[in-house]
Length: 106
Length: 119
Image (cartoon, rainbow over the protein chains, first blue to last red):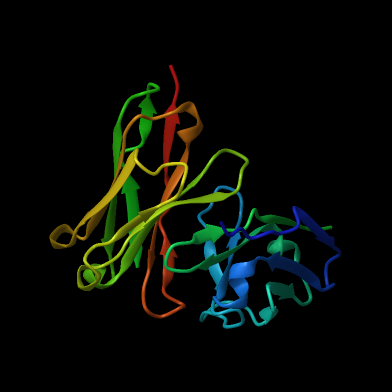
């Protein structure tokens, strides 16, 4: 079966660039989405189709894809970006989230 | 777009519970509905999905709930359901309802309902 692998944690200082990766075989043929979840809140879509940003999501959030890895990049990370981030992908019979990455903006 | 889950609560191991997800603000009949859960301090776990009528209301489930959980929908009420049977302690979690559509940016979540399985 497929799975998506993320680092458990990433730390950056305010203003730095944070990169969170998500790896899995399914990503070679299916798009990924990224969700941001803050404590006590529901997840929010921040990237779809690997690199597209929904309206209302700040431009500092971007996504990219290469082979079986997708990357969420947060340029000029802010304290407010501190949250858990999850990747997601789906095929006809395999739908899954990555394990999640806790982003700390020190 | 609004999704409101209800029906959570305390249930004993081996018991049953039915969650509801009431939708508004979009064309419910055209969308897919997922259930996603999150145990306290843990990551998101996809539970299952039901698609729309043109796709025969097909359902698919995650391995940990297959055979115990059933997703259904009533388009006339813009409501989806999650019937949970043979509940286990490890099913304790916040259960979220999520809707997706043909557009990749159509992906919205409810605020969740807490299910606690305990004796």
